[in-house]
Length: 389
Image (cartoon, rainbow, N blue to C red):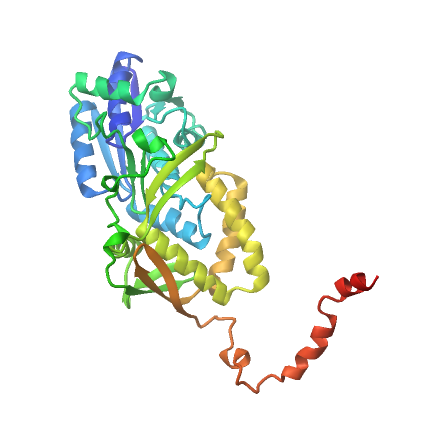
């Protein structure tokens, strides 16, 4: 009996895949795997109910801790950002793919399926993992060249209840680190996003009074929020709520996809915005000028590989090794002010700071200002020679 394992999200694309795999591909048994990487509990519950109704066998995997520890924390240490996008969906896809492969191997199934289209990045992120295994890979949305409107009609005909309509055809992906919204009128880069697309963030126009949060980092990883030690999942969830109330973490951008297409993307990522800003600020206090300059290039290369889903690339491991080494001194606390959509660092402190208040002070006598005269004589020396020529 032909069997297949589907990486299932509970949304329109993967729900439509289930009957399509039977009708168009002739599979007798469709096994679904829903990986929890911090989606809202309501979405997990609805996804499970849809899968239990539509599929022949269903598995749920709680990978939240693993997602935070092995994917989000490395991204924080590398200041993960691709063209201004903080890599939420991109980080989650390889983990979801790996969990799907694990279930297929355990069950002895030889065919893997994802519900990605042929226009986006996710097909590449899934298949970068799927194709390192011994399995056959099927992508019905891409193979059959299906439109979103066709999928909505097909879902209705098959009694599939999905939270998408032709009037509001938003394609939404959520995990603990970010929420992405695309599709419909949002595909017009000149169209202003309506407030209804946002769920994690209040409108910055509400103008709540500024709020200070204090974040403590240990070797580049956040370990405490407002003087309370907590695990990564709890810290990110709590900071999402706090920063979201202040409208922090909205991104509206035109993004260069891996395939070369430009796409208009909208994101919400309150905690990510705050943590990345705080981490980068702390790095400037503790890393040397040479380290900071070099790390900019490392962070950019790391982010591009993560965006593409190439976490198995040898260069990715090389870059992670440098990043991890650089983070050994990234210890301390940062005070962040949240207000009207902004997250600004207003104070930082570290036992490893390369900063001397005494030496830099205008009132200090530790260093004699006369000592700098010799340095000044040679600063720009070659340019002065050229000017005289």
